[in-house]
Amino acid sequence: MARLLVRNDDVVVRLSWREALLARRKDVRVPLADVRGAMVEADWWRTLRGTAQHGRWRPERFCLGTWRHAGGIDFVAVRAPGPVAVVDLFPGRRFARLSVSTADPEGTVRAVRLAARWAREGADPPRGGRRHEPSRNRGGDRREKRSTRSA
Image 1 (cartoon, rainbow, N blue to C red):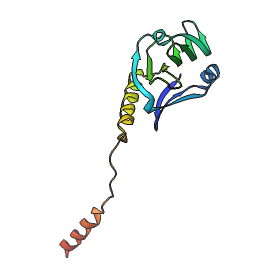
Image 2: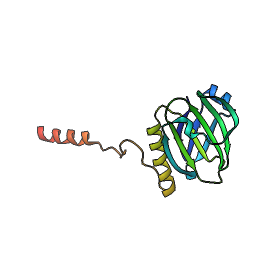
Image 3: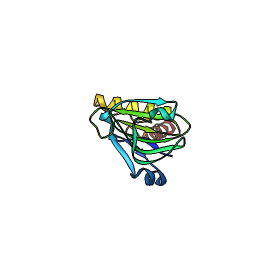
Image 4: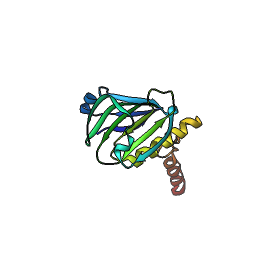
């Protein structure tokens, strides 16, 4: 199954080796600055616009590759049935839309929206976990106090 990931300053569509063979490309990279919006489409077939250009498709099963329409070219990696993560891009880019069937489309869309917002604001995204500060040797201080008490 294809995966939609946020890596550094890019949105990346990673395909399995079989999907890459059918779509005739290994992966797709788009800068986060090109992302106009992201949404979840409940019906997979609604994300298909225009006619198939390159790739492979089987009616009512799957679509992999590029689709050409009046607004540009879409990259699709969708499987029926199920919801699809859709990433809309600004006009004039290589692709107008990325449509990908993922295991967790809501979580994927949430991650893309957050990363795109951080990229537009020009700030570094927060990193998960605790802040690491220099450690202090508190144990040594306690030992010194203990040794003075017993003396």
